[in-house]
Image: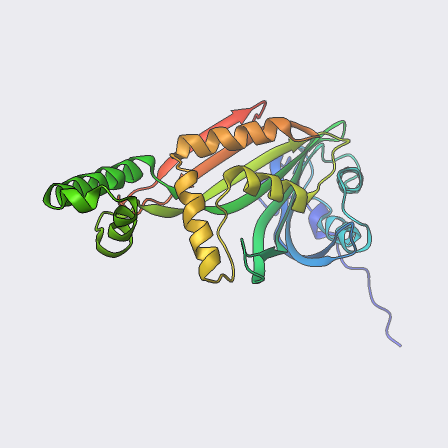
Length: 304
């Protein structure tokens, strides 16, 4: 039997990049790794992972395979803030002193069954979630980012629609003064003959990044529920006519500029447990204009 000769340590060779003293690098790692995530309720989800570390001067490369192997813990250990930090510490330790800073990001869609507003109908929603861990071993920061789609109705367009409806009713009432005194006549006119502009609504998105304290619970579903209850108009799945009517009424009762949505969600984040800071980005994809309306609100959030 022919014995195999040891392979050369390519990472340890010098001169390959034309320098005897390799410079330090701020980030080296892998992006888009396919993996699985175990949630605390036993659910496993497919995810993609980005992971990287810095690299001290005079070192050719990092121990990339060690990072990759350690990510298998995501499939074996239920995810929580504490276990996430433990994984981060292990990733840094695996580099044996050549790295001090970590950047780790998990990207996945959280499936949640959503009921209709009034009927027995329901369907699945997939919520984009990113969980990141960054910093040095003694100062790792966890940020949970959730994207939500909802409907927003412009207050200006609603005011214009009301103005047009009142104008047309006054004109009709002048021509039919006797009938106009009957409230039921007004109701029939609105249902059968009223013609007025429809307030414009648009599908809108909130991107909410929460800085979590070490003792915080992830509570993906609970946090999403709080945000949707705050906005009142999350997009629906399967609906029946009564649900569509209820959704229209919710839109009419929750007129929002992008500024209003940002402030509502900011108040919600202030009330959530285990949150030390946040950044909220709002996008209303306008149906009137060819551009978007955007807003941002933040507290104790510094990009790293």
